[in-house]
Length: 98
Image (cartoon, rainbow, N blue to C red):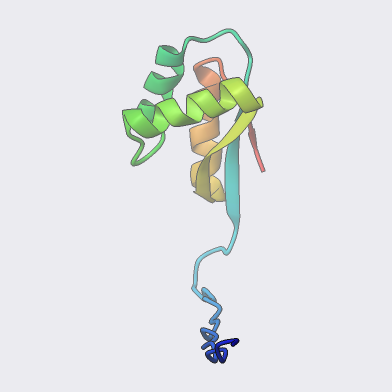
């Protein structure tokens, strides 16, 4: 004998909309694999120039870059992204801001 189905409650979906007085411009710093740096060099650059970066997170990003060819290492204000990208590029990494 089949059991009666229990009505399912569908959770309400809300959208988080950010409204602020900032520039509203958000950029991403993407680092590409170049096979010319060691993991340790990349980790040191990330920890030195990317705010809030930990060595564990830096290793995960370096691994992703090594295996996938690229990774987003920072998302935030365009001015800050440009600054971080310039510093990483100064360390010899292949970087682009999107």
